[in-house]
Length: 367
Image (cartoon, rainbow, N blue to C red; front, side):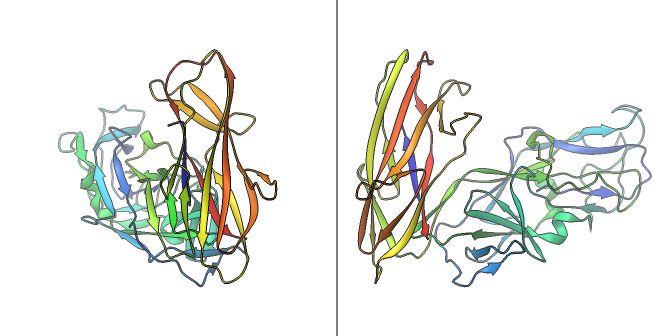
C-alpha cells in the first residue's frame, strides 16, 4: 500500500420494565465516541478463510478485543439520556425505565458492503481490499445484558452521562481481513464510520427492540456512542519495498503548485519504484483506491481546506512506461525492480480560490 497526496456498532439494548415510554440515548457530539486504533506491526495469515461468497480472506493478526482500558480503544464524549423518546406523552411526561437488565446488539454501518466470512462472522468492506469482521450472533440478534445507565424515573434518571458509563457492553471483538495479499509491506487503514452503539430502553419487556436492518446506514448523530476506525498504517511482512520520486517510501506527494482558478489545465507526474526479492518474474496488480463522490467521471475529489463545500477533481492514473498500460488499475510483472508513473491531471474553470487537497492509495497485490 502506498498513500498518495495530490496537491498538498450498532449496539442496541432494550429493557424489561414497566415504564410508559421507549427511548434511545443520543451522543451529544457526533464526533465523539469509540475510536479504534490498530497496532502498527502485525502478521498476515498464510492460510485464508473461505467466505460464504467463495472469496478467500486473509486475517491480519489476531482478533482485537476492545474493552475498558484497552490500548486499542478510546472513549470520549457525553450522552443525552433522552435522545429520542417514543411516547405520545412527550419527553417530560410519564415514567421512564429501566430498573433491571437489557438486551444489546452490535451492527456495522449498513452503507458498507456486507458479506458472510463464516457461519459465526459478518464482514464489512472498509475498502475494496480491507474487511472488518464482527461476530454474527451479536450483530444480527438481541443479546441479554445488564445496562442500567440512563435508567430511572423522571426524578432519578440523569439528563447527561459520560459515554464511558455504558462500559457494560464491553468487551467486544473485531477481526480484520484482506481479500488480496499485498506485495509491499504497508497497509493503510482509512478513517471509517463503522456504526455505533444504540441502547434502546423499552416499556414492552424483554426481547423487544426495533427491527435489526443490517443494510440501513447508521446516522452517527443518532447513535448512543459512535464507533469509528482511526486512520493508521500497519506494517506486515512482505516481498517488496517502495521508494518514490518525492523521497518518502510510504507516501508520494503530488504538488500542482499555484494555478489560475479561473482557467486551469495542469498535469503532474511522479514515479514509484517497487524493489522486490522474488525468485522469478511475478504478476502484480496495481490499483488506485479512493472514495469518489457524485462526479460522473469518478475522479478524485480534492477539498478546499477553508471551505469543505468547495471541490475540484484530479484525474488520477497509473502508467507503465515500458508497456504503455495506463489506467486506475493495471497489471505488471516484477522480479527485482519496477517503476511506474502516477499522473494527476487538474482541469477546470471558475473555481473558488484556495488550497485543495485529497488522498488516494496505490494498492499492490498478487495477481
